[in-house]
Length: 166
Image 1 (cartoon, rainbow, N blue to C red):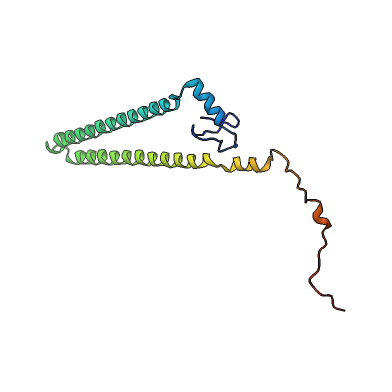
Image 2 (cartoon, helix red, strand yellow):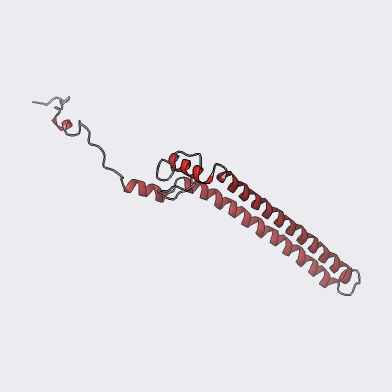
């Protein structure tokens, strides 16, 4: 659920916005009345479904790619090395395929690790960003209420505890 005041993302179970402090109870009740209680649950299940579908498709692509590379290596071995016609070229081609595959795996792994780190830091940054804190501190929403004793402290007598030398 998004805060109607500042637009920050909040959980449906939160009573107050983490960014601006607005009371979200009435907003949650209104959304539940309008969309039904299953709205938040159904959107989460759709997200989980597409996430698992993407993982399945990517895993299938990786499997087909590994099988294809294995077939290419087998073909190179049988055509160039076993025949004995171009052994050096066959060995070079096999090494090229192996190192290209390892480089591809490294790049994919590194990018997925960066994405996980970025999403984790986004989650932490969303909870309390320095820009939001600066705005909260620099723009007071209301003036502080004056205290009864603000002006009277000047009227108090202060006793000096040091002795004067005569």
